[in-house]
Length: 176
Image (cartoon, rainbow, N blue to C red; front, side, top):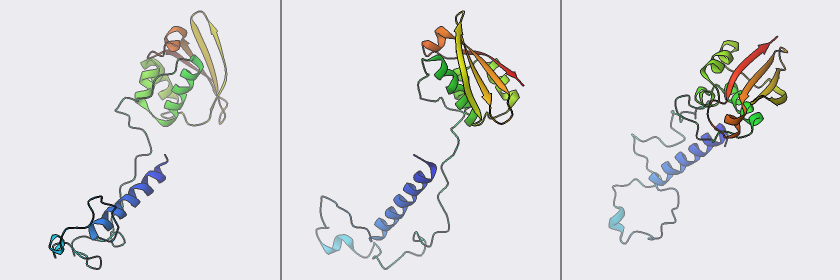
């Protein structure tokens, strides 16, 4: 769900909640209408009355705070780790691209995370996987930056990545 969809849903829900409080929305309450007129005495405003301290949705000057656009960096990502080495490497590139430090720490060693950070805080969308090759208990996955031509090679421990265990990416090398 996109951020703008979440905001629209929140605004719609807020408007309807305010309208319910003001009595202008209908409610399909299975209990039906109140038993007697005294149940809805003058304590509640009528649809045309608005308490002076409660702005209507159209009068409100405050807008709801927007949803964060970046994933939180202090809570673990609940998504399971991939068990295919090439997908595992891609997951690291994606986490780097959105600045998800927690996910990066799950996928790669501290040294790899530091190497990627030294190149740039956020990887961005410009890294294309150009190939992968297996050998001697490792899988090598290569990427090319479509902006500046830099290449990146990640080395993964094949057994660790195939099991979907943490920190399977153990080496990162940039070549310009």
